[in-house]
Length: 112
Image (cartoon, rainbow, N blue to C red; front, side, top):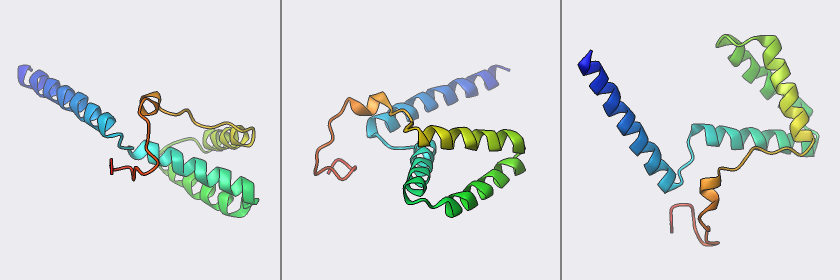
C-alpha cells in the first residue's frame, strides 16, 4: 500500500509540474484545440449558411459519442444547446492566464 501511495504522489507531482510547464509555454492542449475547432466550424457554417456540411459533421460526431456510451437524446440536446448559444453570439471563455502576457505582432507563437 505504501508503494502505491508513493507512486500516486510521484504522479501528482509530475502532473503539477507538467501543467505548470505547459502553462508557462502557453501551449494549447487537445481540449483547447478541440474547442477552437468546434467554434470555427459552427461559426463559419452559420455565417456561410452551410447547414449541410455542419449537419454531416454533427451526425458523425454524435455517432461517435453514442458509440462511446452517451445517450443519443442527450447528445442531440447538447448540440441544439450549443448551436443556439453560438447563434445568439455566445463564445467560449478565454483562459485568463493567457491574457496576462502581451503577444507581440511579430510573435509566431514560439516566442520568435
